[in-house]
Image (cartoon, helix red, strand yellow):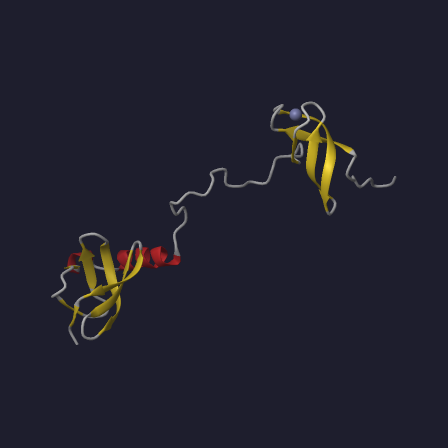
Amino acid sequence: MIKKVPTAGDHTLSRCSKCKETSNHTIVAMVGDRVARVECNVCGSVHNHRGTAAPKPRSASPRTSAQPRKTRAQAQWADMIAAADQTKAIPYNIKTRVRTGDLINHPSFGMGQILSTTRPNKMEIIFEQGVKLLLCNVAD
Ligand SMILES: [Zn+2]
C-alpha cells in the first residue's frame, strides 16, 4: 500500500467551526505533511484544519493586560516573604535609616526587601510588583 500524502485540493475530514460538526472539507493549504487550511464543503467557510482527534491543549483565554504567570521578580519576592520575619518589617518612611536586607512595609507597594542601597538616599527594593528604586536614608 502506498501511504497517501494529502495535497491541496484533496478532501479531508475536518471539524467546521460554523457547522459545529466534522464534515468533508477541501484542503486549501498544507504545511509540510500537515493539512493547515481547509474549506468546508457544507458552508464554504475557510478555516484552520481541525482534525477529528483532540486538539493540542492550548490556553483558551486570550492574553489580557493582567499577568497570568508569576514573573521572576514575583517568585523571588514570594520566596523572600516566606523566609522573612514580617514582624520586623519597617514602615516605609523617607527618613527611616535602612540597610540592605531590611524588610520594608510600604503603604502602596506592600511588603518589600531592600536589595541594595546607594548612599546617601537611594535603595533598590523588591516588591510583589517588581523591583523599585525608592528614596530612603541609607544608614551606612
Ligand atoms: Zn461548515
